[in-house]
Every structure is written in C-alpha cells, then in structure tokens.
Image (cartoon, rainbow, N blue to C red; front, side, top):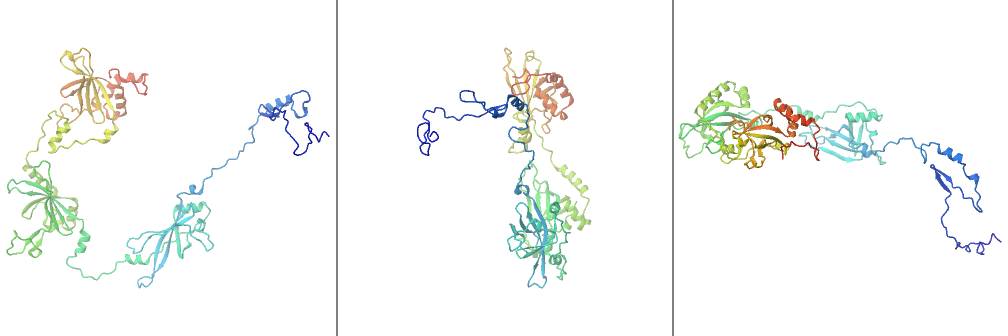
Length: 563
C-alpha cells in the first residue's frame, strides 16, 4: 500500500499527484565542482541519512596527480591542418582572358572581279565567366562594316545546350558559331602559357591567308589618262599646307615720314598666292595692323594697252604673267603692288625647297642677311632708355609703366610661392650710423622665401627717443650697383652674419639669426656659399649641438632677441 499512496494519502496514479506545499528550496543541487581546471563530483556532506559514496569519489592522491598533468588544450584537441583561403573564380580570374587570332571566308556574289574575301577576326575568351566575344579589326578604306561582330556571351557548342569552354579551343581548329566557321590560326603569349600550365598542347600556328581583294588593291593599275599642262588636283594634294616664308624689309623712305619696316612674305605653293605681314615692334608708335597685303595672286606683267587700273580690278585676261617662286631671290628687291621689298632671309623649309627645285636662285643668305641687318640698324633711331627708379612703388611695378601704355602686373612665380609659403628667414641687425644715438637701435630683418622680399622691424626701446615699429615694408631690395634693366636682388646666399647690406641708402650689419636659418641653408647647401654657412655655424652651431629645450609643438625655440 505504501507504493501506491504518496505522503498526502492520495493514490499514486496519473492525475492524482500534487506538489509538496512545504518545499521551500527549488534549486537543483550541483553535483560537480571544478578544481585546478578539472570537473570533479562534489563530496556529499556526512549527516543523518547521508552516507558518502566512496566508490564514486577520487582520492586526494589522484586529484593531486591530475593537477600536475600538462595538456595542450583544455577543450578538445588542436587541429593541425592548414586550410587555404578560398578565392572565388570571379576574383582569381578577373581581367584574365585568352586571345586567339582567326579568320573566316565570305563569299562574294554577283561580282566579276572577286569570289570571296578573307576577313581576319580576334576571339576573346573571358576566363571569369566562360564568355566569348569576336571582334573584327577595322581596315582603312575596306568598304565593309567592321568592329564587334559578336558581343560578349556564352556561345552554344551543340544542340544539347552545352557551351564552349577553354578546353575546346586550340590553334588550327575550326570554331563554328551561329553558322559561321572561324579558322583559328594563332594566339598570344599569355594564352600559350595558360594552356601549357593546364596541360593542353597547342598546335603549330598557321599563316593568315591574304585577302585577294586587298592584294589586288596594292597593285598599281595602269593609267591611260592624257596628262594636262597643269593638274590643279595634283597640285592641291601635293602642295597643300606648304608655304615659302621670306624675311624682307619694306623700303618706304621715299614717302612722307617713311621708314624701313621689317615684314614677312608668305608664298603659298598650292595656288601661287602671296601674303605680306608686318612685324610689329613694341613702342614703335604704329597701330598693330598685322596684314599689309591680303592673300592674292600678284600680277607681274600686264598685257599691252590702256588699262584704267585706278577704277577697275585686274582680271585673268589682262595679265600675261603672275609672280612665281623664281621671282623671289635673296638679296634682290621685289616690287609687289608698287611697293619695294628687299629679301634678306628665309626659313628652313624654303631653303630645302629651293635646293630641290631652284638651286641656282638660292643665294648666300647668311652674308646678305648680315649686310642688310647692318644697313637697317644704321637707319634705326637710338634705342629708348628706361628712366631711373623714382622710389615710388616696387621696382617691378615702376618698370611696367615704361614697357606699355596700359601697365600690366609683373609675372609671379606661382610654384615658388606655393612651395615656400610662410617660410621666413629672420636675422638680427644693427644700423651703421655716424650718430651715437643710433648705436642702441636694434632691428629684425625678415627674408620671405616665397617672393624674395625683405621687411625690417625695429624693436622699441624704452627711453631711446625713437618710436619703434615697421622700418621697411615688404619689398625686393636691389644690390648696390644694379641697373634698372637688369636688377640684382639680395638672396639668402648674400645674408651672412657680419655682412653689411645696403637697403635703400641705409647700411645694416647682420649680428645674429634664427636657428631655422641654419637648418634651411643646410638643406640647400649646394646653392649657398661656404662662407655664409660658416658664419652661421660659428654662431648657431653650438646651440643646435646642445640639448636646446623644445616648445610644446616640438620645434626648437628661437633666439632670445626675437619677440
């Protein structure tokens, strides 16, 4: 009866079991504990009704033996196999393609001159997705639509739906695609190496057959046309863009206020026209009209008879002869439209042309040119002199007022300005003056590397009687003795310690410099004289060799005389 009834007096049957209402601990007892990294059964507490199970427990000696064992890994064994990284095909074979050279024959119908044509093509096989495309190279003047014959796609191999693979391609085979049979004759070097690496032996390359139509075009056909006296088409095709250029002097002294002007005469061989252009000189006082005579055929000899040239133009029926290349000889005077031009030189193409066709007319151009230039220079007035610098503005701005009526800003070296922006060399200087009150005056000379300008700042001194501040604004300082035409300005190579520099009639002696000056000049030591570097090393070398304290930005502190 005890097996059929529980503690509450109910039969132990399904549906008649109840929970113990007096139970207060609902946790599940832990039967394992960890010691030295091993899971061991928990020792049961010895009490009333609880006897220890000594057969399921380990002795203390066995537990200590386990703690001295050395294992490679606590959980499971280490797999020593090395797995290679997986690279998908679209990554490993990206931009790798096989190139085969092939051709196909095209039948020509209803033509008595040709039966077929051989059209070469290039077959591209893309390894990443096994697609192919066929391109026909363009041939000049072929008369056929050429280019991409078949766009990139997977080409069918048979009626079962199989597609061509790279294993199916080889040299010396026929590739049939959509009813067109392509004969593969050769491949490139990469294709040959790839096939050899995959164990495929390529056949020997075959020669590309020659197209009979292209071969016949290269053969010069006999011509039976009667040559004319002057072929304008041939003259246009052979002489287009070929111009004879002569340098001449326009002798206009006989007219009022006349002078000798340099001009350029162009003779166009394509239609025997002549053009005259004037060489405009700066500040000549003349309007810049480049064309003296527009391009036209100049008549040399008119027909006999009365001709009212002042009211009518000259037609071809009134001219017996036009000017030709034989009429332009170096060292002689040519009269064009009642104006005299003395030829003294020509360009290289004109010399080669006369050597080939008119060798007798080619004079000694060098001797004649020197003689005419000397003659022209003797007639030219004295060159204009640039006035002296008036101390207003910078030297470059004042010079621009003398070069043109509308002054243009001087050119600036933009690359140098960008590379050396915010780079300044600073020196300490004192004024050389016969007055004793100037002995205590101290100046800071700053040299700006971006534009080679110099500024001078005077340090204010208490009870000196002199107001400090800006002594010289940023400007380029010329060296003593330099001219306005070719000015020579101060550079970092001239700024050595102990050197006296003259700044607009004021003399300054450089006494000290910033540490950055020595560092910068050391970096360009090939452009700086040795005495300039030695003067800086003697003054600043000891400070750079010592452990000079650095500021928070990591740069060396500047000399104490700088604010």
